[in-house]
Length: 206
Image (cartoon, rainbow, N blue to C red; front, side, top):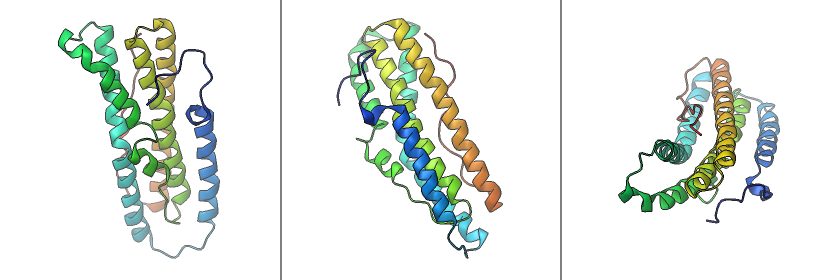
């Protein structure tokens, strides 16, 4: 895994947030085409299939969700001067592992980005949710973890704090969007689907 991008440097195309957002939009267009096809399955069958899809999404993203929580816990302990001397040598490796967990180098995240939703009435919302959660992991969570890495490595506290604050806002926005897409699917199905495992991320200490 390459080191965090220096502050001010141009991010490669595969780590730019705009690229993922554009990709998510393309997924929505594809989903719209799917939902134009004739649908014959009952709502009960559709709900069963979509329940399996949401469980698969949760399985794929839970490793990144854990990694994000771990990185933010490290950051809070760093700011509060709670990191024990014996634990300090372990921190860089933990943060590198957290970064990988939210990248396409993690097979679960790669699988997440390729989840295919059956052509049910709710498929446009669930397929859009796949794109939103992929962005949450590979753009939002990744940036947050990299900001913690920079802070830990002794980079500019102001720059790292600003980057972490932006990532926190994006994490909250995309989590809310994914929840909204899930609720829209539930309304069409007249059924409850499994809740998402994305953690709520509040403001982080600078």
